[in-house]
Structures are given as C-alpha cells and as structure tokens.
Picture 1 (cartoon, rainbow, N blue to C red):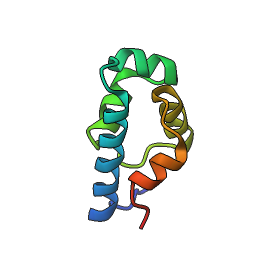
Picture 2 (spheres, helix red, strand yellow; picture 1 turned 135 degrees about the horizontal axis):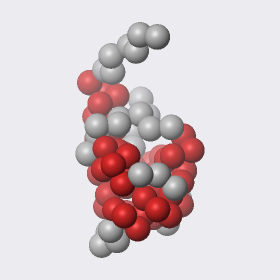
Picture 3 (cartoon, rainbow, N blue to C red; picture 1 turned 180 degrees about the horizontal axis):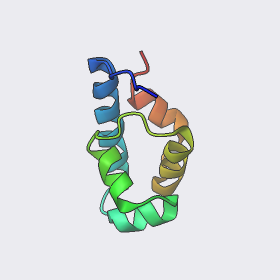
Picture 4 (cartoon, rainbow, N blue to C red; picture 1 turned 45 degrees about the vertical axis):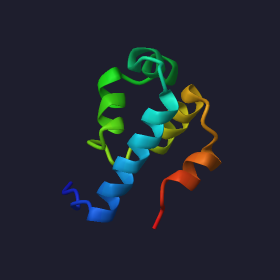
Length: 81
C-alpha cells in the first residue's frame, strides 16, 4: 500500500495537536501520561513533536483522557480544515 504524502495543512494540524497535548500534559512526565493512555513513550513523543501528524482516533481519545482534556476542547484547539 502506497501512502499519499501529507499536505502542509495536515502537517501543521499534527504539530498543533502535539502542542496542545504537550501543554495539557503540563508537568506530568511522558512516561506517566503514556502509561495511563496505554501507548509507548516513543509514540507520545512522536505525536507531541508532530512526527505522527495523524494518530489513530482511539489514541487521541486515550491521550485526551489521560491529560484531562475534553475532546471538544481539543477539537476547538486544532483546526480541522
């Protein structure tokens, strides 16, 4: 399967998602948040730095829950179009 390259807007959206999640994590460690979300620290690091600009929906939900960020707030902080 060939993956279509991401557009600049998609990359920017991924970077914004990462920044919002990183800010919501606050002073909590990546290890703590990743464990609570059920993902690896490396996956969290990649999401927070925008290296995974389109994480799976359930990963985003788990991270939002782990950092106490309502999905509506996350949706409002990250442009969709």
